[in-house]
Length: 95
Image 1 (cartoon, helix red, strand yellow):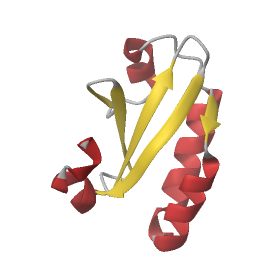
Image 2 (tube, rainbow, N blue to C red):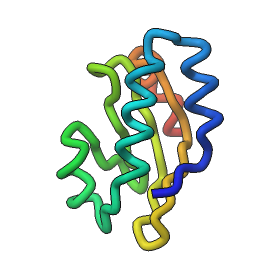
Image 3 (cartoon, one colour):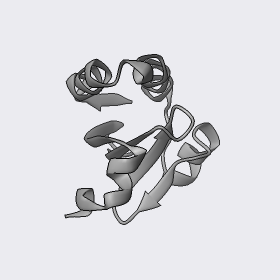
């Protein structure tokens, strides 16, 4: 899949250096994924959840939540937000 945009991953990793390797692993794995649906995606990312039209990935042992819009037909993933678990629980990302 093509990821839009990697810049958000890098910015989050700069603020939270302890998440850098987990984010790099996620990036490498999602880039190689050719899932055609959420069901197929769950074969690669067991902790991914569908929340409305968005997909939420738990990364780094639940330290990070990455929220994305995935267009399976075009094989593009748009990163909407990357949050700590605490930020995610506040729910403001849904607005």
